[in-house]
Length: 148
Image (cartoon, rainbow, N blue to C red; front, side, top):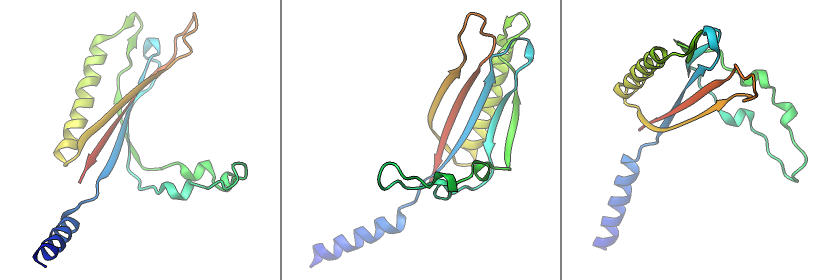
C-alpha cells in the first residue's frame, strides 16, 4: 500500500511540474548578389498560426482537399525584419559586412536568450543557379529556439 501511495504521489508530482515546450524560429536571409543589390534580413514571425488550419488528410493516397486551403490565408502580416548587409560589394566578398551581420545576429540571439529562449538547432542552405555567370543567390539560416 505504501508503494502504491508513493507511486501515485510521484506520478502526480510529475504531472504537476511537467511543462510544455514552446518553439520559435528566426531566419536570416543573406544575399549573394554583387554590388549591394540584394536584400538581406533577419525575419521573425510575430503572429500565432495553427498549422492544423492548413492541413488536410488523404485517405486513399489520391484524393486531396488541398484546394480548400488557400495559400494567401497562410501568409502572416505581422513580422519583424532587421536589415543585414549583403555578402558582396562591387569588388567581391566583403568581410566587414559578414562581421557586421554576425554582430547583428549575435545581438538578436542574446536578446532571445535573455527572454528565456534556448538555441536548440541551427540549419542553413544556399540557393544559387551555380551556372557559369552565376551572380545571384541567397544564404539562408534558420535558428530554432525553445523554452519551457
